[in-house]
Amino acid sequence: AMTKTILRSDEFSCPSCVTKIEKALAATPGVTAAKVHFNTGRIEVEHDPASAPVEALVSVVKSTGYEARPAAF
Image 1 (cartoon, rainbow, N blue to C red):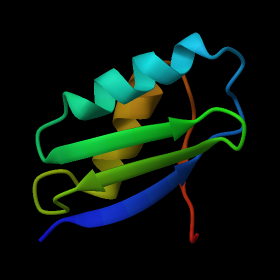
Image 2: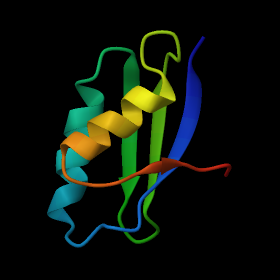
Image 3: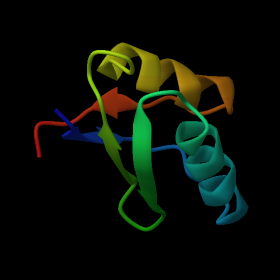
């Protein structure tokens, strides 16, 4: 079953990083959608937790050069 996870990052400095993060997440197996909200630092990811656990999502964001953490809302 797909689940929606919200990650947060306080580090967005440029709108171009949004596309980079969305592309990296979208290319991750198990991820069906990724939307980055530049103004609020929210990263919404629809994914299959079995093949793309939250830790993996955080790692993918980190690989693009940004720290992210799971958010409760």
